[in-house]
Amino acid sequence: MSIYSMYVISKSGGLIYNKDFADIAKVDTNDALRLASIWHSLHAIAGQLSPVPGCTGIELLEAETFNLHCFQTLTGTKFLLVVEPNAPYIPAVLQRIYELYADYVLKNPFYEVEQVIKCELWDEALEALVRRQGAGPGGLVMGGSGAAASMYG
Image 1 (tube, rainbow, N blue to C red):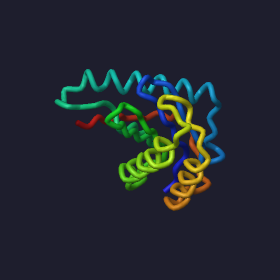
Image 2 (image 1 turned 135 degrees about the horizontal axis):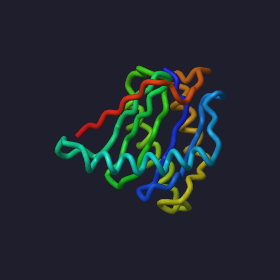
Image 3 (image 1 turned 90 degrees about the vertical axis):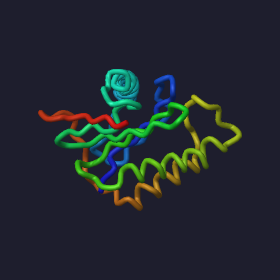
Image 4 (image 1 turned 135 degrees about the vertical axis):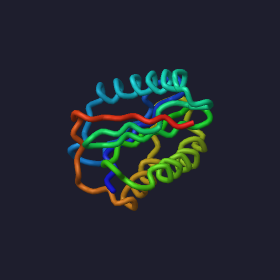
C-alpha cells in the first residue's frame, strides 16, 4: 500500500500540517491550503445534506488514480490521507495517526491547539508508521474522469 500524502485540518478549516510521502505526489503550499479549505467546506456541507441520520460528512473520495480518506475527531480536527486506489486498512491507519497526534502533538507543552504542527518527534513517528505501511515510490496524478464520494453515518 502506498500512502502519497497526509493533511491535518483544524476545526476551523485551517491547514495545520501537511506531508508528502511520495516524490511524485508533491503539492505546493498554495494547493495544500486550497485543498484544506475546500475539503473542510465540502465535509460540512455533506454532513448537512446527507439523508443518513447522524452523518458527519465525507469519509472517502475515490478517483481512478487515488483515494482520499478522512477521519474527523470529536473535536473537529480532520486527518486526510491520500493513498493508492483500493488500499486496505485505511481507517485503522488513520486511527493510529490520531493516536500519534495525541501522544506527540497534544501532549507537547509547547504546542497550542489550532496552530501549525512543528514537532520533530511527531514527524519521526509518522514517517515510521508510513514506512511500516509499505509506502512505495508510487505517485499521485490529480484528475481523471471518474470520481466518487461516500458518506458514512
